[in-house]
Length: 450
Ligand SMILES: *Cc1c(COP(=O)(O)O)cnc(C)c1O
Image 1 (cartoon, rainbow, N blue to C red):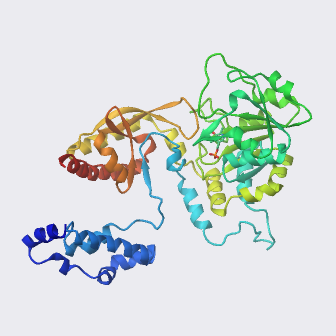
Image 2 (image 1 turned 60 degrees about the horizontal axis):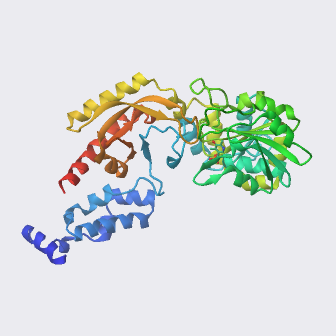
Image 3 (image 1 turned 90 degrees about the horizontal axis):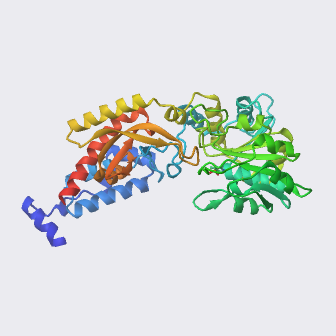
């Protein structure tokens, strides 16, 4: 291999390896010293060493090492890379579910330093942690007397089960024994707290009488779970929250999605206000689904029960950090964010964007066309609901280079084409998307030739 490099180089002159710059010389380039301040010297040095290795292998000329290193610098120190979600799945669990609003991002930034998360600056005394976030939730959901925030939706259920039903029974329908994804099953999670499950009804039909017959001195609470990632149709029946609330025991209702109020775009999706008004004692939900906030779990409802949960020793282990509290409050109080925009996007506008992008790309010799598409809520929400959308359709060979590009773009491969669904792409990213597709085209064409 060495000899090959020499031979290739031989045609161009002396052995290029002798012309290789020293690592320190490359590192002294202003672009790389700046990067060292931002990313740390070890990381930048690794990038330089890799560029030098490429030159040694003859992949790039020695003069190009500094430029190659500068081009290969990562944007951030972290391993998490930003992705343009062009899958058409609004809440993509593998992409971290809800993208945050600008208000939420700014709130996180503001909370990064020391902040009054547990201090009353007026009096100088210690205050309740995250009080203003909790206030934002109860103001947004007046049907809730109190609120508490934990790490995620599953943690909200675990805390409710531990504080209200450890050593007791949770009465739950066999039709609501849900697996939430990646092998995690709610029944297993609940049993892990020391509560016993008292299953009632059948997979397709459970009545209020089934619950009533199971309730006794051992009952901790009745659990209602919204089947958020599947649908049972046909000969079905389930008891409503209103019916369950008349059974004389607390009703804990898991809505999943985190909608605080009804959204006309999703008429079948339960919301916290609706289920609390129907008589639920507590509603639990995720913060990073349809609410559009950071990962967290919401507990809303009766003041005495919320207090029992928030005062339980386990609450300390499930508490969220100040960044989450900041982002959640900004999500609840601030202007509607990307999830709302995606959900309510006008299909005609999406079509216009697809037509314009496809035409632009055809002008750059990319085999692109605008096609109709169907987007989905995803992330365990609104199962079976499809949202009319539009996509830019590209040859399937584009999928891999787009995924590996900068920014990484994740589309959907369907019918031998790579679809970029625009419902999940913010409009201001369109120009960026077109550039990335053009660059991916170059490497897709190169690979076809190989
Ligand atoms: C998503 C979901 C959960 C789990 O919430 P996480 O925030 O992912 O922990 C629990 N129950 C239902 C009904 C859900 O949809």
